[in-house]
Length: 240
Image (cartoon, rainbow, N blue to C red; front, side, top):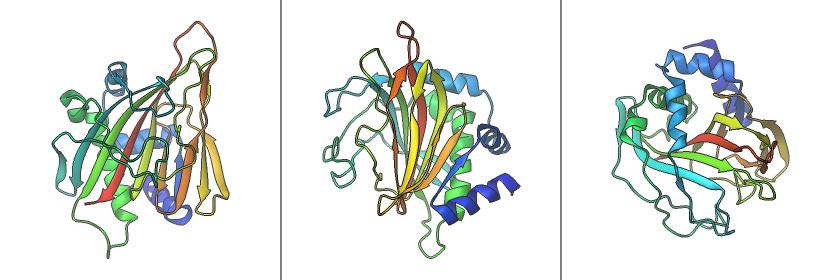
């Protein structure tokens, strides 16, 4: 196992979160089969509008998929809704939200496969063997948060939160003409533990959802008459 991966696991185990620089994440992903990052990133140009926003916002586009991941491989599950209880998402929780599925091409893409293999390697190793599942239920979310003059885009409109899973990856895919979008991490007493801004493609945050809260500040356009957006992949792992 690479020293970078061992450092990620150690930091995640110690602190409940880890911020991984883009060059380190790229090396880890390449070791797990990453190719054609540009083609993978282009798939964010074909996301449907999220119409479930209880705040009335129309600033978020997304696709969603559910998979089973274990040491034997990666298997797509039948398309299903995304559900969070209101305990974890007071804004949009409490209902089954159906989103457009990730395309077959995206699911099969070597970049996504490398991301899932990397997540499995880290999250499985960081899980107590006594509670480690035979396979993980994984949900994937392609998010584009759009910002317009006078209308900031909200990456986490529910505010500081937990997702109700075991582990979370947030991987930056692209930032275009936006300012801010600072990630903050807090302990279960909501005391701040750290903050950073995902600014470079492949820069990432990995989170132990049972130990910390996380949130991201709004993004605003730098130049008013140009498209402005923040693209991320979120992968959540929970015990099946």
